[in-house]
Length: 234
Length: 137
Image (cartoon, rainbow over all chains, first blue to last red; front, side, top):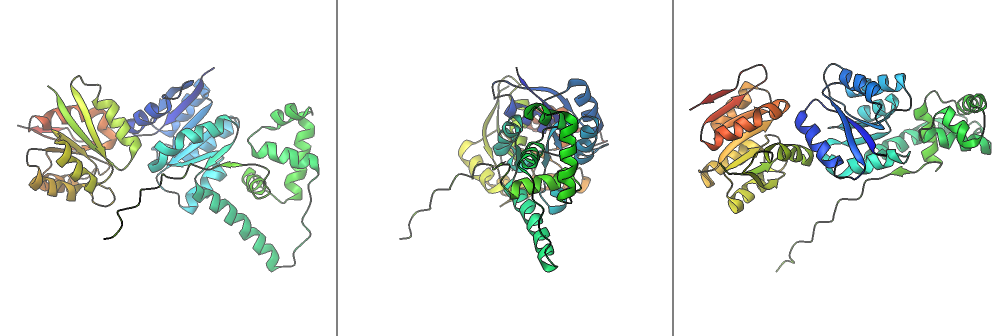
């Protein structure tokens, strides 16, 4: 069965380039294209793609709001955000919106295929800078704790860690229940307990925790090829 | 009519998109690509294209500087800017730098083929958003 991808970018030339890149892969199909965020949401609901690739800077509805709307409609959507900037603010907003992949447009030719592969395998994909920011954000929280009286850190049970990992990997409560042979209600109870124990308010907090505690792996893009050394000086 | 085209843009994805559009025309061939102005000048000297499709904002050497240099080094080469800058001011600068054409990236799928055809015949082709394409003989 083909992997179906929806492309959303307001530049047709960029969509053509992305399509040419992605359709080189056997088994991958661009099932639709959208020129703005509203069209992206409509087409995603209609076509039910496996992966949605959204440009951040789109008219009518930007990529971040598109991501939020898609995930409000159906948390199962897997979204890769394409952006020309990897500023701290953009990264935080993309993570908060629920994007599972973050790729710089300038590096799309190098990274996008790896990003789609990662999401296809229920992993996340971020550029190294995003990884640094996520970890820095977690360390900042740790330092803030140590500045005051450090409370005893809550420990998760083995089952809670298992569920934390599966949730951070992008599985819904229902999918986790299926994987662990539990009822959905049980998983949701565990989920509430985990969030309460760790004082988390969003899935992003959970993801950061999972990365820091090696519960999930993050796909890194391959390093750029080394340029050959210049001629030796005379 | 065969046209040999050199593509210059710092985004490989954009170059790929331009290439798929251009090579849809029989006889048109993308003979090379460059990702900055300096590389564009070198490749123009090596490959001797008929038309260069050139971005403005690029590292090392921007498109306007490359265009001015190429006007002296390769006077036969026709240059078409394909750029994000939807600005009459930038378009004027591009034409003054020696370009024959100016198209906005958001409309490239609509305007590029006509623009390349026009500049290859030494006609001016300019099109900004909301304005009709201007082709002058």
